[in-house]
Image (cartoon, rainbow, N blue to C red; front, side):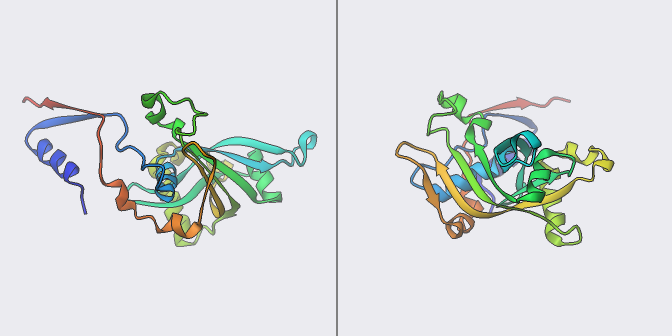
Length: 218
């Protein structure tokens, strides 16, 4: 079901106005709705940090952290599943080939929410989500591979032009633990069932920070 605010924008556009929207599309859920907050963070993340167990000669067995682009779905279908586009030329992929256990971290510091609220990235209210599990390489012939690729390309269109000889492929994180730090009092652990049971309709109540209407003239 479409939000009333979106419907209003469509009516304004048909009336001959351009709508300029500034700020986030909607603010995060309150701290007492941990599963919704976790899904909100994942849906709004374009990149994550990923910690792997290093296979590099000088730091073998040490934690190694890197930045990777991510998407959890298409604009109309946020699934909560983190999909990544990797190549075996990358150190992260080489680590995962040896041991596919990893932890990814996504933070609202990536959005403008924390800046608007004047929250430091380390402030618990600048919420962060840590997801631990095993990274799985998807079968290119599977429907999920196509979905994951569409999810990534919809959020990162430039990926379509990345070098073919790098042999990028779609992976997904098979989730084993969800840890959320979004308020004072410590980490909250969210069950996988609660996380995936969140309805994405929770994101329909849009709150615009500022909307400007510009009349279109012929």
